[in-house]
Length: 257
Length: 257
Image (cartoon, rainbow over all chains, first blue to last red; front, side, top):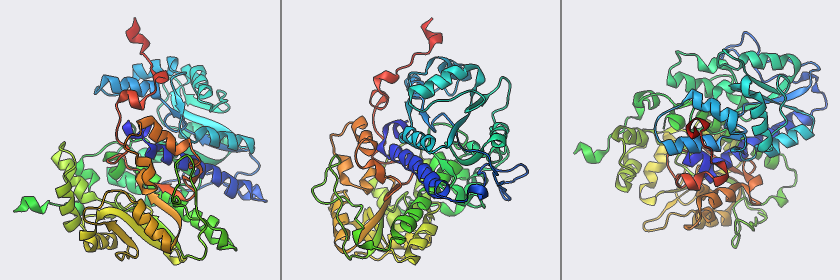
């Protein structure tokens, strides 16, 4: 939390990511004379991480698809409350109450409001795809407005998790892709780009390798934009032996004596 | 550590930063026909964070100046050893032994080796400016070579902290700037860009604001490139009330009953 919510280092990372998104829209999409060849950056149905495919967009209007929490919105009130509680872990019911009552205790991620405003000004539709509940859609839209990130209209530019729906985002991404050409995505979790990253049996090293060791690597910073979040999420797992490979095993020579 | 060394999310952030650096060199510097107007991205003497100045480079050859630890090089062996020890904190003597003996227990930060190779291929000089000790320069150069990041030659493309020297990097940056035009810098700490960020009396919020609330904000992703590091460093400080502003104070309604 000190890093993500308090440090200049994390603020710089966020500003850098949002400026990269805007530079990409301007240089790689906006300045193209012939836009007919633009492809969606959402994986096409049937893709795998090793064999990704991206479909041409035809004449669909261009959109940027974004996660909400810790991507555009800092949940300061919720995280402060967590910090005051100390250990205890995630409580889904408390998070639901936060969604319902915390709309004015948030702030924009550094750089996000400026990037979204620039994208909208140039005619890109800004669409949010979040696992927040559809039951609190009005409060989520209010939170986005409070942070200067809106507007967000349910089932048009705001897509949320329905009652009893699973946590993945691909189904909603597919619905958005039917109407829009998704030219950029941003998130703080790999699942904000594809549910394929979250295969339940993936080893820590394999999941990490799927980011940089596949044909998807060139997308980071060029269509896919990652925001920092070391506080929570699917990336925070693994024991020492899963995180550090055997060849990195160093023994302090002082203690070998 | 799970985040930085184990997650796909952090790998994506790193790849994104290194691809942004390379894209910047190619599009903003490399393609310019008239390079006489290029300015250094190192702050000129007399600058403040509120009043930064950048000098024209004249005919000096172009260079990229990079921090080493957790910017281009992951100190896997040292951090694994730290993780096995559990709490205990930083031990300068153990770190010195690591510098001296750990050269083959490291890996490149995702994306760094490819970006450095591309920069060198296009004629940019790659220069490292690190607070590692000059006494272990040979081992540091060997670690960079092991990770595919070298070459690094002391007092030419490798600048390290001399015996008894303070920790700041501005003095060495100034020496580099006398001989080269610094067109890009990368680091995981604000001090990798300017010592001015590390004023000893700066409040947490003021330090964070100096990143995005000044004329320096446009540099992130466009000359200055930040790498993620939530594991150690000058950004990790502040109590709850320093990190979360009063207006973000949320009380769980369940508990007010």
